[in-house]
Image (cartoon, rainbow, N blue to C red; front, side):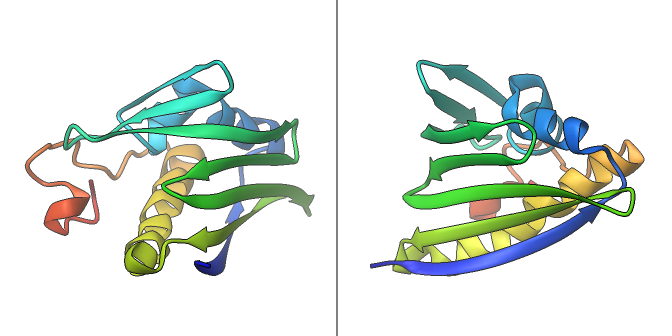
Length: 140
């Protein structure tokens, strides 16, 4: 059995905007992957280094819950409105033990870029295939 962890993020963006960023190809391309293609209940992620990954969608309940099976881990996003902000809780269960540290750190990179894009309109990624996560660049 794999490892688990939880991250939380506070966003000034509306819950509907956050849900759209997580659940649409256009939204995910703004902060997560270079592009995604959603079809037949799965999302194909395309990353700068040429890596692709197909993640089955486990749950999509607007505007509060989205879950996928991402790189071997059950990954769920719970969204909640709180005093004019949206709180995102990302729960990762069963992350493969040999990739746990990359998954743990990687979600910080993804979530901080999500905040930069949604709250400030700034994409922090370098979009350079020669400066990607597998070469230890956190701004991949």
